Length: 329
Image (cartoon, rainbow, N blue to C red; front, top):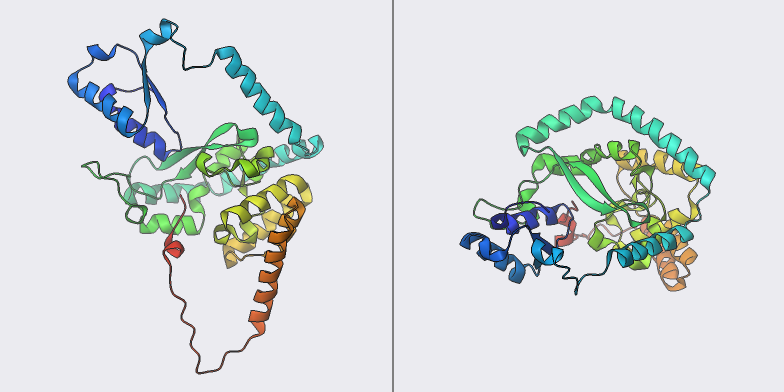
């Protein structure tokens, strides 16, 4: 991280919005040589944000008591990568064909939606301002970090006085519309073309939301749309969405990808609907019979509910909850 010491708190907050967690800062000069304002800012970051502060002098003096050696870090990284690759059972021929399809489809879609992206960019510019593109770091295939791109849908995270704004105040009406129509995700076509993402695959999550229990969903590249998106999308619980992604990673094929792409068009036009059968199958494939049975009971209840006829005097008024208004970034 590069920046002035006095701006450390501001920089850390900005990186946090992009999904980048800062836990250590290295100063290029000694702490005593900094101005009083810079020293106060660094001490505030150290105490309030729980950030470790080192100086370059200490690093050059081989003060490595709290830091693993480079060789051990490299070995650890190789071990993690090898373990993740060992679990990958997707056929190589399928991956090659899918990559060719991603390049062709991503390029074609990018050309076709260029006028739409231009229009969206203009709307974002006049509604929210610059920059119109928002990036966020998320784990990609095998856990490697990638930067996904989106059109901005939210205003600045803080007021001029530094006070943090709630997401409900930051989300603009145009941004809400872009999210509902998924137009904010159009720039991710670039991620597909350069090979960081695929047309079909699990949606990339924030690092804090990526559970180690379902790390197998990272065996394939993240995608613009996926098995979870056509079987419930935003209406799914975190665990159900993760297990659907894991089911896709184990059953990925060109035919399944084609089915997901066709179903995505229907989902965009008709809206998201939860498929309890797909959820039950995914849990059973994972070996959790209790949740598979629960999904089956929910599916049976939904089917019976469709045939139920309420008397004319009965009025059902569902109460809105705070979760219904929540919109993910």
